[in-house]
Image 1 (cartoon, rainbow, N blue to C red):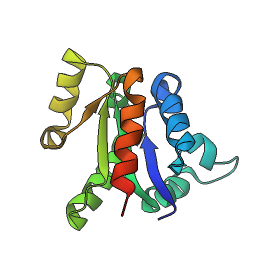
Image 2: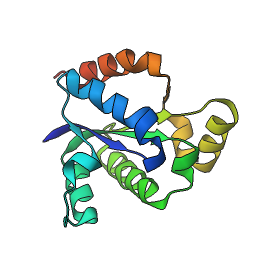
Image 3: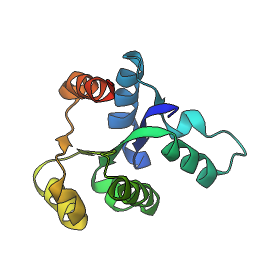
Image 4: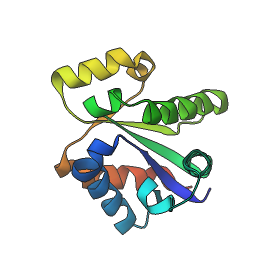
Length: 139
């Protein structure tokens, strides 16, 4: 594996969730695959994302109202879920942005996630997320 974590997300969540999370993970020495850092001008987007998914141990899926309106991040999530089922190794880490009705609609839209333990996003929990991932990465 070349990356510890791939962050799957809708572009609308980049400023408030993805960038602070990626910065905290990187600051803790966790190798992060993030689209804006790994896909360059002229690169094939599908090819680069496939490489990133294949070379990452975990995929944090940032699930939000915006995510539910996007096909591309959902395809990334489904690809990794399929790989996870076949390998019987946990790799999908759901991170739900928005509580209450948003959370309920996400779990209703993606019933396969209902059986997975998920975390709910709060900027004050970034440290806990980083600590948890660091522990998961230990051999």
